[in-house]
Image (cartoon, rainbow, N blue to C red; front, side):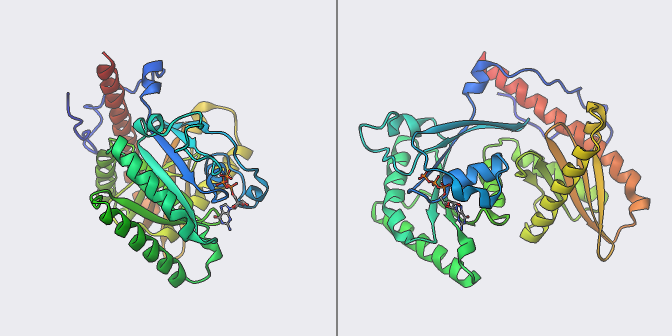
Length: 350
Ligand SMILES: Nc1nc2c(ncn2[C@@H]2O[C@H](COP(=O)(O)OP(=O)(O)OP(=O)(O)O)[C@@H](O)[C@H]2O)c(=O)[nH]1
């Protein structure tokens, strides 16, 4: 199978092939990755899905009714991110034989399990079910990744309390797995809440792992940073506000919050002044000037994705030409990566 080489970036567009977005076939759709959302009753599964993907306000989730059957949601929000979210109701024990879809079928096709623990309740009661899921799912499909969201952290006032709970859960879970000789199974822990940006950040980390081109995208963003003296850059999915890639510098949650607010503002304004023309929409860009000569610059790269960068100490008037040119090359390179992906998945199906 041909390897994906990083596209030739920032040296001119001659080497880059034109972008073609062809319809996805049935077989390709079936191959999409699957993420399972699990946890005890009322831990917050539906709320997370509704807030992130359906734009319900966090307060609006208070009235959500308990889920009674397994829910499958196809999430295709951009060219790189197409997966299925499967929500298992908290009242359903998937290890019971009466459940409509048995756990073997469930885990054998799944890429990641997100297990949600309500830390506002007695979180220890959620640990035996987590242990049961990890041991069983790992046996059926050793490739599954386990992501644990320690959720509703907004109810904990002190950062110290959040870290103490995380430490305690981590310690108990790893000890139980070690006792079962399963220390090789790695779990990732996140502190989340729908009342702040932590849930978007955690989901970004989870879904990024589903994108095989992630190292290439990271490389491209690193190169862009170098060429334009950018401090931080993100490739955002505009619909869900999940970022599908960022450069290799450390992530700052305050910066993420700022970028996220910027996207909301720009999209709201774009909706108000929308001319209805696709061409205008595709060229959408915006600059926010912050304190101390720093800037946030957003530019749409296609219908779903936007590149957002943070710069300090630059005179934007002077550098705007350089940025525009490199953004253009970035966009072309991205199209190239997507084309390689489409070609590879077609080859796989032959
Ligand atoms: N404080 C706080 N409450 C939350 C958060 N996320 C969800 N909730 C609340 O938790 C309650 C239960 O949320 P659901 O999303 O219905 O829980 P669920 O896991 O889907 O429940 P089942 O369908 O019974 O499995 C709701 O009242 C939500 O408003 C959060 O981050 N913080």
